[in-house]
Amino acid sequence: MPPRMRARPLERTRPRHRPARRTLLLLVVAALQPATLAVAEDAAHVHATPVAEDAAHVHAPPVADEAFHAHAASAEPHAGHPEAAKKLLYTCGMHPQVIRDRPGDCPICGMELVPIAAGQAGNEPGPAGAITIDPAIVQNMGVRTAAVVEGPLRRTVRANGILAEAEPRQHDVNLRVSGWIERLHANVQGMQVRAGDPLFDLYSPELQVAIGELIAAHRARDAHGSQAILVAAATQKLELLGLSGTEIERLGGLEAPPATVTFRSPIDGAVIEKPIVAGDAVQAGMRALRIVDHRELWVDARIFEQDLPAVRVGQPVRVTLASRPGEVTEGRISFLHPMVDPATRTVTARLTVPNPGLTLRPGMFATVEIDSELAPRALLVPRAAVIDSGTQSVVFLARAGGQFAPRRVTLGSGADDGNVAVLDGLVAGDVVVTSGQFLLDAESNMREALERFLAAPGHVH
Image 1 (cartoon, one colour):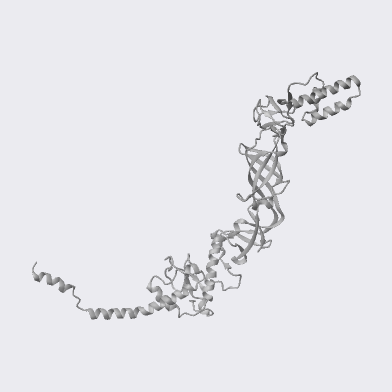
Image 2 (image 1 turned 180 degrees about the vertical axis):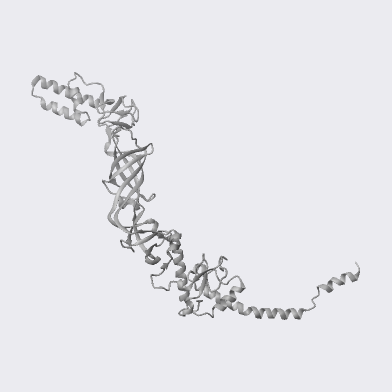
């Protein structure tokens, strides 16, 4: 490439008017210095707004024009001046703590600021946070009200339960002599037996000796007529060995002791446990069978601790089984466990239900409903009227002239009809807002923010 072609680009990139550019830059910096001061002053105003959490994110408006507007606004009249009450202020619908004296955009979310009249900032006398809304606007908002009334506080406690065997209806067949099971009649676990049905035949040398003594005593009494005391002693011995009176009388009329003795069921029920089989050797004190009468069952219901005040012994209950929908079984609470289960935070409530047809079976799932009257007379407010923030509960009182005022309340137990008991904060006859109160709450928060803004020294009015 020729030398003259390489020298020409170097001449074009060489700055020719460097001193003039430096002078222009100094003029721009000098012009922007008042705007920087205005940004700092406006940021101080925003930090004093009522909501500290949002204000912490607002340090300066994003547009330089807003900085000049805020700087000029600092020269406007402050609180206490009559002309301030007539001035239009602008706020953000999403961030009511942002208040300006000129239209523009919200520095937090960028939404267009909407005008509000400073005279509506709550300067009229009334409760803190009270607002006044035109009746036509109230109707458009769909605001509904209800009166606070007094009445009984009733609720239904619902719990899950499981059917179980009633412990008083369990019976163990224990042996009082040693021997061997020659034949087992109740040989299937779960089979139904009736009182007097044979359970098993036992061979026991000890029983054979006692039966022989009884037979001998009967023969001696028949021969001499004066040996009744021997019969009574032999009979008592067999009773102590576990034989029934009917079986002893039958054995006393025999000619010789039988090889085995049949043990019979003492009650009607089902054989639940059968640890023996035919041919087993058994010892005195051993449990041979367990029989349970299922004509009455327990329902162990799990009651959460917050529902315990509504549950007491003797209350009638309704039990519905998953296997039999639509069919309700009546019963009563017979026992409340004194301890709370630390794993489930529940208390066992035991209900006794009849089962004459043996259609109910232990292990079934059940739904338990317990009707309870917590208080014969309580102050009731609709639950829909309560705004719960997690740490406090607030309702809005509706007053004459379209005025609404927030009121903190202390709540008690809830009822099934959608009401909740009020312990403090309201009286009978008060009218509360049940629909649209969230819009009122937002408006009240904005008015409170504006009140604090106007009351703070050094802010725009």
